[in-house]
Length: 110
Length: 114
Image 1: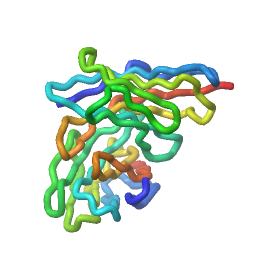
Image 2: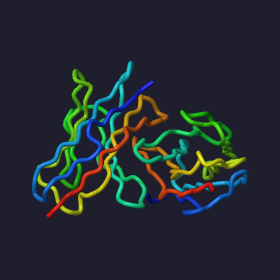
Image 3: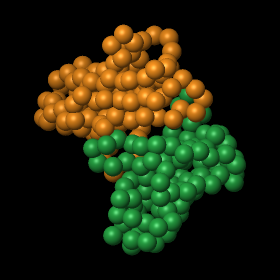
Image 4: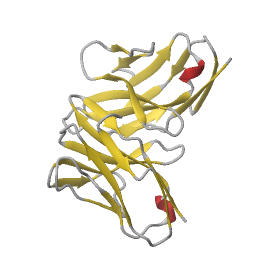
């Protein structure tokens, strides 16, 4: 997981609150991704970016927004938190035919 | 679009016994294939990947997987497991492109018992 830093590691949100999950990389890779992991369902792609200023939707983008103003940072924003967004969120980067994952952010919406 | 089916959700196995985790994929285009391991409360670590070349790929800790195009499979095997191999294992696929957008299977939980 070297090179990909996610914060916070744990967070409890109330329904309707907003928050931003931060993802920072120090490997200078163009491609960055956000996945969510739900029990028994593997990981699903939320959003991805192929470089600064360019983002696109993945499989499950509803309820989330992203931005990519720099190569290093790819924050994921939840505007109106819902219980269905309780999940583990992973940021990832790819370069050199390898995908690196962050340590994960555990989010609970109550 | 690509999809992955991991045929076993739970695999209990005794220490030093062999294990096989089955993975089948579906895709209309050529793919890259990956196996990841996740230990409790941790992120995903790459075990091995198939990009091209030899259809048998190996990891440094004794796992191997074989890409079978005709059967659209990428099964993971280890001839002798250790207690430390207890983890969840994910098979993933992406189409052959630079963006490596992964589609994951649901995961297989391996529990190694003494």
